[in-house]
Length: 184
Ligand code: IMP
Ligand code: MG
Image: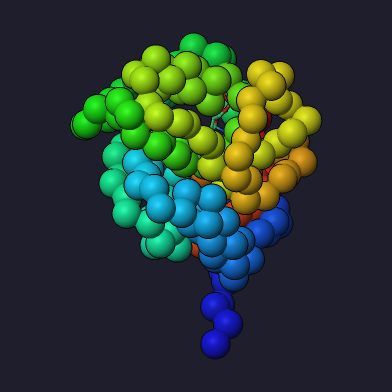
C-alpha cells in the first residue's frame, strides 16, 4: 500500500519520497555490512539531524554494533555553516581501537564533518568512515572523503527525514525543498 503524502505548506516540492529513502538505506546497509564483514562497529549518530537516518540504517547493518550519539552545533547564519563547531553532547564511551562509522544527515560545506573527523580521529579509533544521507557536492571545500552517500543533491536547502529548518520540519517523511520565501 503506498503511503499518502500530505505536502507541508513550507515545502515547494518533494525531492526524495519515503520509499526511495528506505530503498537507498537498505543498499547502504548491505554495502556497510559487506565492507566490515567480521568486524564490530561503533555507529556515531550526529544529533539531531541524523536521528531518523541512523535508526533506519542501523537496522539494515547486520554486524555486531554499538550506537553512540554526539550533538554538535555550528554557529552563524541559519542556512549556512559558519565553520565554528561546538560540541553540545559528547560520546558516552571511548572509541579507542574501535571501527567508527560517523552517520550524519548532510554535508554542505564540509566544515562540520572535517571538524568531527579531526576530533574523533584524535581519540585513536582503529578506523573512521563517514556515512551521509545527503551531500551537496557543489559546496564542499574541505576535500572530505565520503565513504557512503545516500543522495547527491543540488545546492538548495532541504528539510525532512531529520533535516530541519530552524528546528522544525524534521518529522516530514520525505526530503523536500523549502519554498524560497522561507529559505533564506
Ligand atoms: P556544513 O558544515 O556546511 O557541511 O553543514 C552541515 C550542517 O548544516 C548539517 O549537519 C546540517 O545540520 C546543516 N545543513 C546544511 N545544509 C542543510 C540543508 O539543506 N538542510 C538542513 N540542514 C542543512
Ligand atoms: Mg547536522
